[in-house]
Image (cartoon, rainbow, N blue to C red; front, side, top):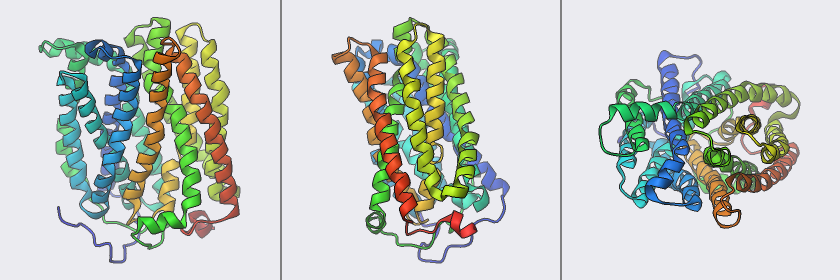
Length: 441
């Protein structure tokens, strides 16, 4: 690949207006990321079938949902993000689509659990490599005044994909069983059918735009040294990681294992759980976006960037009593309401994280900073399902619901604590990068 922009040159001004190619590219990236998340939704709904196919327990599927899906993928996404900072992001995007499609096929046909784990981990690399790629491209595609809206719109497209993986899982398994004549389990056929969507997306990728790297209004030309950036902002970064990371422990424990917990506790059908969770994920993920945007707009007038950790901390505190209600449910429909409220509150708390990172980083470091952020947060994300699965299997007699609650509540308390400290730090001092809110005042 050849370099598509010289980082030593002065970056051009941010785009002043939208182009059709820019709109198409952001929409395309949202659809691709949504498809990747629908893959994870199908896997979450199929966990009991995967357990039967490979003969593994709760701790092992917790390892799969945490370490396999999240941690390994984010580690290997860091060198890919360096490519995104230096070379053609369009080419990298197309390569990631092709790799994700092929790895989904390999996952469906894996004969043993170690191979299945390997292929799912490799697919996780493509998932996490998309995050820094997308959030490094959006500021170069969207006018500065529309950057927050573009970030939230991309998140909305991802939410649609994530919900589709849950909602249509039963239908997907049913259709795949009828269409695919191979002598394999239904969940494997569903993975094969889902992978076919990657073929047209691969060819559509050639129509996307490879934008020049612009200088956002929220950034100044800065050093390309990650070390210098971290040394200059280490306190803010540490508090931010504590806030977002502990929240991820609390969110990913139920997010990855709640379908299996509902199936086990309420003896519910997989199709019923999948459709309900699909609606819940879609509604909570989309509804949180305008709420987060309005809260940020209103609170930022007075608190500037300190408004964002305040929103995160408040969300973590509110989520604690909401999740605790899950232990009181005796039928599945009240449990759906509780988990929906929990996901809405925590999704609102997380919605503005990408915007915060874009504000902190320079164009030359943006993709790598997002990749490193993804890795650090993924360590916490992997911890959630692994702890919950281990508690369920080894200490709680396979009571996965109780294990999820015991894992999530301490994470929420810690996230709120770090958010308060981050809020106080923002109020006391400014980061070295300029504050767009102050610049525009």
